[in-house]
Length: 576
Image (cartoon, rainbow, N blue to C red; front, side, top):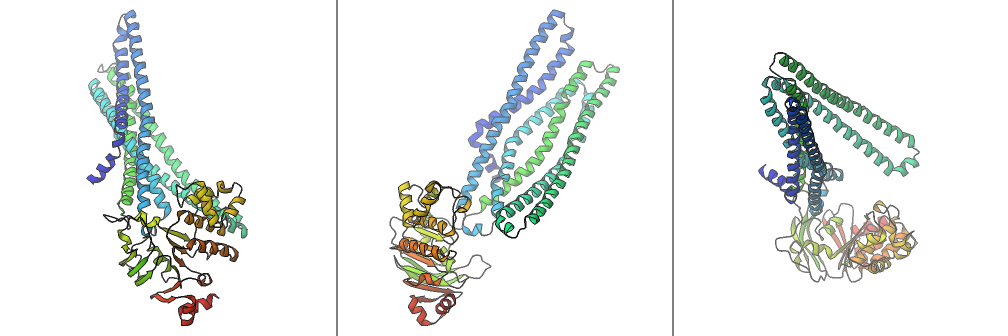
């Protein structure tokens, strides 16, 4: 617990001057609100009884003092409202950078068990709640305590009886505000959930708009949306009901405080134990006594939201990457591309069956290896272990004789190029998507890579050539075009080791021929692993591995494996 708080307060450190200035102006502003009623009391109780000329002179001087105090309060509130929020936003930015950087370090096994929406909420709504607590929490506490305690001390010294009458209303206001605030927040939480449902339904409907139109189900989608939309209005109705009761109830209670103070004050004046000046002073302090109550009630809710968000934030930071550099990692200067699997076994989670069991494999530098087999045989898993997307459970994988777990992770992955079936393109233009393979590449290098990938011609036919925006996930391009851009990326990266993960299985025959030509060009002189869906694309491979649930069932050339008339031959004749 102590560590949590120490870490939380640590986020203030880079902005301590700004934070201290914010607290100073919070205290100053709260102090001014306590001083002005005392000046009014002095004017109405003492100054008005001075000789006329002296009275006017003193009133003008005190009016000037009050004007200066009002300006001080105004600037203090501006500083709190502007610089205080800047301080909170800066802390939020730092925390967001920290959690995003941590997300980048986490391995595939973490993302296998997470939903993107939940991870996104950690970096948006949770952090907003935390920053609101870190900014508003301390200043609200300080302002509330100064106003409340200050008012109590001042009023108790003026008249004990009337002070007790005024402060007897405070517990009632606090309980009412707390109960209604809690219900109102719960209703607003339901609103957010309803809004999330609507957003989800809209996203689902718009993402599948082609399916909706092809089945002519626009009316059905509209009906589904209308139901969700109506539920949102129904939930809003309840939250507005609580909001109305909260605001009107608090307004009425504060008015009752005024009524109570005036009534009790009138009785005390009639008895000669209070004068009118002190009654006016009490009335001026009513707001100073009730406003802190509202702030403190809000703070309790703010603290719950902010601290629970902070705990969720810490939960993510506590997740250690499964894949990380060893204590003294080896750097790679030159990679030949020899890869050896020695007695490698692997499973995705402890309670699951092994996907790979006691695999032995030796691949020479520059060798072209194709991997075939039925679904679930571990083809993709085998290749995912080479760039350490996952670590082996037992055994080891060597790159040029060095255990890949001892190699610096960035160096290892810098020397491996991967072309996948499911191409991910960013919402950028063509040039930047290819340049992702080598961020410091020149435009000329990018264009050369596109030519090698047989992509240059179609790119030049796009509206703005290489500067064409291709939309989210490359939605404006065909499957073959997207695949060629992903191959251009790898050409630009120019790694000595390649992995093609069923890179052509989702393409039509014409696109497949173009892509196959690009892949063969890319594979020249590099250690290449090809996960094959269509066996016709791997007939020329130097070695074909046939993987089943038993591991590497067969290996050899296309002709050798057909001659064996085993698993490969059956797969080949089925796909033929």
